[in-house]
Every structure is written in structure tokens, then in C-alpha cells.
Amino acid sequence: MQYDSTTRIGLHWAAYIEVDDAYDWNPATQVDGISKDQIMGVETPLWSETIENMNDIEYLLFPRLPGIAEIGWSPTEGRSWDEYKVRLGNHGPRMKALGIDFYPSAKVPWVD
Image 1 (tube, rainbow, N blue to C red):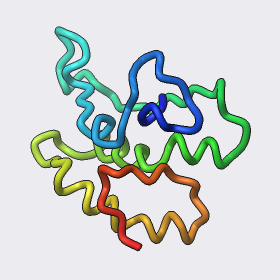
Image 2: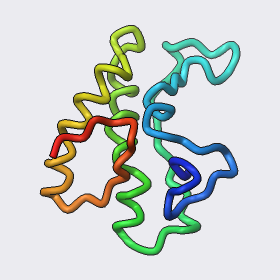
Image 3: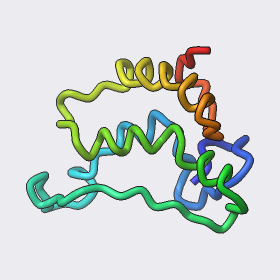
């Protein structure tokens, strides 16, 4: 899904999914009657209708993917967007050095 209405690729039929929205997702609240102990893991679907190359894949996955991974292995009680966005921003130089084409969300205080 697109991050917002200015995202260069992707779709928004399900919603615009900004980085903070993705990080605040809680799989235990999605279906009534399902408890946390019944959830075996998380996944990150990547709709590929608008993808043409690896840069497009990276742009739609990053920086959301690290946050989804954290959802999968960290207790909900210990997660905070305000704390996470700073940690995520510190990875900006690393993603640039690795040549990852990531979405530079204005909601993240990116380190140069």
C-alpha cells in the first residue's frame, strides 16, 4: 500500500499505510476471539501490481519492514512509536550506504 497520496508507486485500496500506522499495528486486535497465544507469527504482504524492479520493492518495504519485524518479536507493552522512530531514523545512513531505496517519511527524524 502507498504511504500517502504522494507515494510514487503502490496502491491505496486498503488504506494509506504510513510508517507510524504500520508500526502501531497490533495483530492481536484484528479478529475477535483470537488471543495472542494463538498467533504464530506475522507477515508483510507486498502487492506487486505497480512494482517494476528491486528499487520499487525496497521503497514499499522500507522503512516499514523493520517495524513489522519488531511487532513479531517484541511485546506490545514494550513498544513505543516515539522511541522507535528515533531508532529507525538512526538507520537512515545505513540504508543509504547499502543502497536501499527507502521511503523518507517525514514522520521519522532521519539522521544524515
